[in-house]
Length: 193
Image (tube, rainbow, N blue to C red; front, side, top):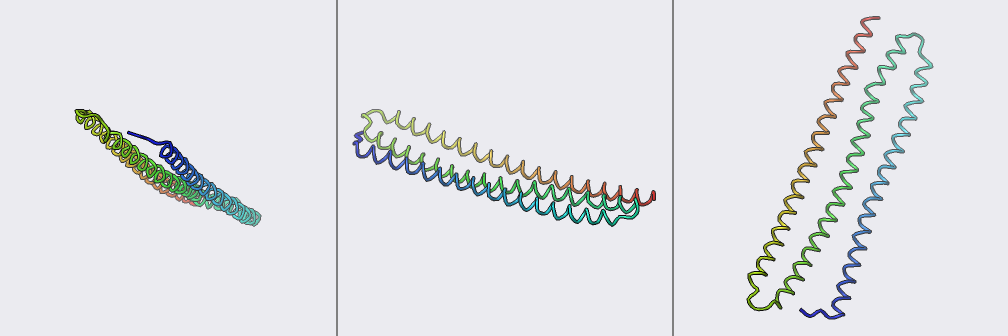
């Protein structure tokens, strides 16, 4: 295999430029996620401030203890649901960013594997006679490693999707139970009055 200095410099330059492009794309994805989280936080704080002001006004209008209890019980479910909505929004932003970065890195890994295979093919063209068995064994080992990586990536993706689904189901059950308990508590307080 003959590698001229020009080929080597061109190859290094292309890899350097690809690395810069990938780094820029990854940085853009992360910064986009930071912007979304910041916007979510600002919206959440704004909403909490508005609700706090409304609660303070309602609290000032309370004339009897039962009305105060009703006011406080009325805050339980919406507050919990808002917290869960915030957590879901954060999870969605995280998943979106993870998916973007995963696609970026998978594309880079695929391109790198293609370049590696092409370099090996170039090297194998000039292999000495009689080394075909060793060349085939090396190619088979490389193909097997690539296949194992793809299978592991597939399993990891499925596990992440299952974990996300389980989290969402558990969250929904928790919200349902909290709602039932709050209603039961409100009914018990009202019947005790």
